Image (cartoon, rainbow, N blue to C red; front, side, top):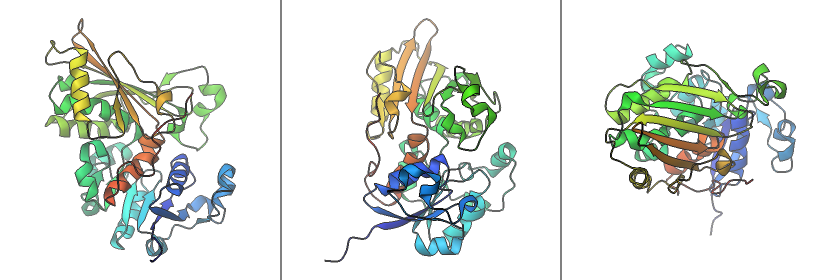
Amino acid sequence: MGKFRRVPVGIVGASGYGGVQLVRLLMDHPEVELVYLGDESSIGKSFGDLYPHLAHATNLLIEAVEPEIIAHRCEVIFLSLPNGLACQIAPKLLEKGCKVIDLSADYRFSNLTTYTNWYGTERSDRAIAATAVYGLPELYRDRIAEAQLIGCPGSYPTASLLALSPLLKQGLIVPETAIIDAKSGTSSSGRQPQTNLLLAEADNSIAAFNVGRHRHTPEIEQICSDLAGHELMIQFTPHLIPMVRGILATVYATMRDPGLVRDDLITIFSAFYRNSPWVKVCDSGIYPQTKWANGSNLCYIGVEVDPRTGRVIVMSAIDNLIKGQAGQAIQCLNLMMGWDETLGLPKLGFYP
């Protein structure tokens, strides 16, 4: 009997928080072999130089980003790069027959004019971008399974859309009334030094940022419009809170039927996500906490109805680096390869 073959995979942009999560998860994945790590800023260094706690687990070196060489060695490539860089590399990898999973914003938008307006980068890859599938498995599982190019959602949109999707898809709310109030740990801003992320600045404080102009807004609006069947504008406000990882998105919206009660909504949410192993709808009166999802690919959803205002309140908690980033990318990989959706992903978080 021949040796069991694992699928060779690589990561471009391995030095950031998304990259290190991918390394950890892919090394434990039973169907893949991590054979390439690329990052132009760290060429020649071992991955253990960047993350000493993993030095005993991998001896891979950081290599130059050369699409021809990458495509020769890898069947699947994860692009964990700043916005505006993946769109320069992905077309070359796709041309060579690779499957590409992009963690940046470059392939999240069906309309590249929207991308250019919000991200300021002109694009020449419109034909390729048109083939990309939005990588939220709970909504687009079948399309992801057939795709060669995935644009993985941002962490804020992931938490927000999982809270909103049943409400919009089932026509339960007045769509224009939806408001998203979301809070995230500091790792959502990446590993690059920033003054507002210093301990002395972020600790013992909470602050909104990019109010009314956060780049995840059009991404959320695009999917909400798809679900509602018409163009929508959504009010989205993000906040930075003094913890490392986790997102809690709280969604408010006016219900079309004021007679619905909490248990009705919980039944609807549970039915909507009945085939989604990574979404857990909380029991009546239970509201999720970010700590529950810490280190896992799970999304916890709590639902409440305020009969006094006629509004539904949905709370969604995820780990921004796992379900909001690397874990979701691997969830997409599993679907693309025809594997079980839960393969190689952490099913339980770290607690406390």
